[in-house]
Figure 1 (cartoon, rainbow, N blue to C red):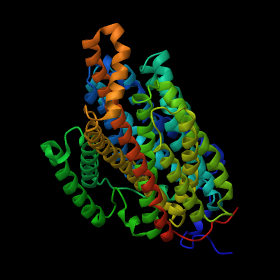
Figure 2 (tube, rainbow, N blue to C red):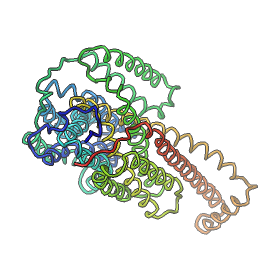
Figure 3 (tube, rainbow, N blue to C red):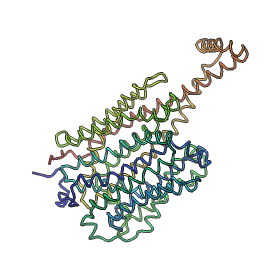
Figure 4 (cartoon, rainbow, N blue to C red):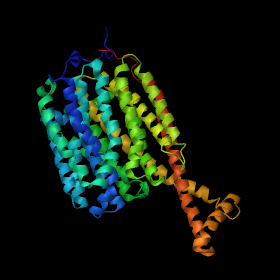
Length: 523
């Protein structure tokens, strides 16, 4: 019987550890869930944090940006750092660093201290996603790798949904500081489990790693420049700002120098040669667009829509998003069992079509909807996530050698995070400028010559006159309609963007033709 991926070596069938794979899965996924939660659980607490550290709305966003930038810098260097320190010690060090950063975040009384603590937290947490993905792929035999990716997918998709709910509840009932303190007991339990069950694979014990200082510095320069540029671009009006232009030049020069250096150095921080593998490159590109730009933008902006336009409190907004996690949870475990029977490319096509439909359904919402109109599309988008994540990751990593998996997962997760940053930046720009366009179009109807406008104005004025008097009521009526104009223009901008995301998800389907056609074998 032929292998599903002929280029995989014989050693890929042998487990990397003597412990039971499910014990290893629990050991590495506990800190991963903690890390993924940390990227979203803080969002709903930002107003409270800003008040405590005396920071403005724009300044406090550095609490998120600093964490994501530190995450992105460490992700692609994970395989190199695992060789340098040995993977088990490296994972334990990451958990300790993340826990120490969490403790410092909870104790912070100034914005500068909090941002520095978030950088420490991000450096510790950034490596956990690619390391856990690599450990799972190595611990389970090839026939069970889809199940392993289902386990991993539950954390990276469901945890961001739980994050806002948990953060909102903790912040409302206790203090935002407990959002960070909660990581300490989880970190200690995770540290003990990694010590007991995770082992270094033979290929890491046999190798040695030189310190590629130049590659590491160049990596920090281009990743940090890109993420800060994307985060602050809309606020600074993009290329009209000297700050953004400087970041753009630093990004281009840093990335160019990084690629040139990493391709010629003997032991690079990031093995860019993996991108010569067509299946890995295509799968990573699809993941960057789908899981990064499309899904992350959707999950970031739908809660804003619910809170700013529909008036949902933070906890109710999180609960409305929760069915997405339920849909993903159900689908991922089903896909993990069915992937040996159904073509992975067929599952991916069904996933992108389902995702496109759910986003289009959200793009038809208005300001008079009930929660059911959001819950059903959310459940469908979660179902689509399960259909996409498991087969895509399994195919993308399926024909790599065991010693390449750790480096590949670092690149895979880095580009997904960069895709998320790009998606958020593009959507923020389209949201702001689309709202201005719609506002200009709608205000043209607010004239004495528009019958509908005049009727609505007179109706509001008549209702306000007994309380405020005729003159004051006339001014208040105009103000009420002006406020409604802003709400409607913002709504139309949200609708446009959700439809753009629907088109982007469906546009991924043609790229599936270039993925491997081989069906995974059941174990």
